[in-house]
Image 1 (tube, rainbow, N blue to C red):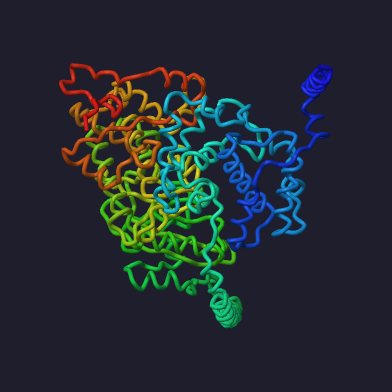
Image 2: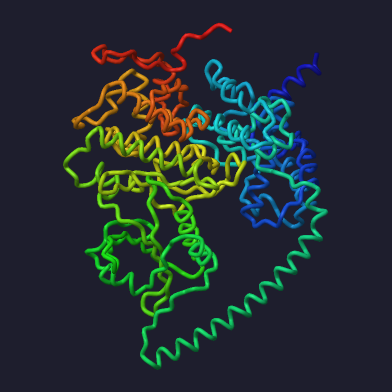
Length: 624
């Protein structure tokens, strides 16, 4: 009995001790199994990394180990008093592959971070309790398959992104166990039947891809190829030096003869090959200066981050638009050549046509890179929607612009070979000719899509408010990223509101969320701008709004292709059911509570004389 009382008192004393003292003085062995990560590192050829990349790799590796631990023990993090031993175990693993790299001091990781958890969520049960009904199961269902291929991976990642807004309602813990990674850790542990250590799961959810063993057998070939390339580079450098000396000599002669000191560059083989295979004109810099009245301010018709657009008149009397790039250098010629190559490779009535280009270097104005296109006399769609024009555009005009833009994008995706993803569809890049025919313009960010590739992972580019969620969050680019941007532009065209609106409390709001809320309540026609002249039939107008809402759906695979969009807009093809949307990433707690309590769509006014549109969740289920 005395022994029992003694044990009870000891347990009571330990219970009231501060956790910090316990973690510091009573360190226990680490329960995390880092051997799963060792096997992955040993089977891969990791390139040399800088400190930042190394720390990211270490962070992702820990998430993989946490997922494996969660699968076995139901906990995201180990006990707090195992923090020091867990870091020591992880450091021992890293020492075998990167000697001398100290995880905590090099990456700034604090000892207790490894066991802190996120927002008081440390176990599986606590994480699952956050989500009502089957919300979590539905979100992770797309991850229950092999994730080694691009399409299943993109579907899984897109589904998981909808979970973050549901529980990131307070400040998160900024450490290795960051809150945004919890859906990934959970999905790898329980949603995927192959488990967190499966090759596809590791590559998709933790970005820890391993290279195949065949790469080792090809090293000799790579070395030989590298030697050949080095020899080629030396020969190229010698040739460039010879040309440079020759040009310098000619320049000296020109200066001595007081000749015009302008070098019309001709060494860009990429541009030369484009000119030979097309009807592009290579303009001289003097021609450009004459056409724009020496780049007069009065000739400026547009401005952007790239530079200015000038109106010009060529010697044959034709009017053109000249896009002059600023801050140019010889090193940036690849970017310039890329835009010329993209525009030169396409020909369509709804795409801006390229006349030619100019590359030159002057002693006073430096490197000059200029693109010459047909002049669009009615400016851009942005000018007419949000500019100084007082007269509102009529419905027939907006309908024609919407259809023309859709046709131009459909050609880029499926008519051009290879296909092209524009990446910067917005109202200011939709130009209008003298008949208000829409022309898609500005291909500076465009990407060619190799045949058979479902998506590309690339640096995020574009304009805020128009960028698709999966591209903004994960850098995953597909043709449907353009479809999302088109949906935003179509909503701007129909409503007269900008992509990013200012709400009553001066907070930014997305036009996509605003339109969705109206359509969901059965007030589809309220999306249309008030006072629009010559408004069309209600069923046609409603169809355009529904197409815009479907195109701007945050879920990638809910969006139609641009071919399907064109068919819906120009034929009697009906709009498919619109899936429910996840809660907006910019929603606050009040929006989330309203979304959770709302149900059913409202009814359109009976005066319209047609059956109101119903949503996927509202339609009766057909028995199987």
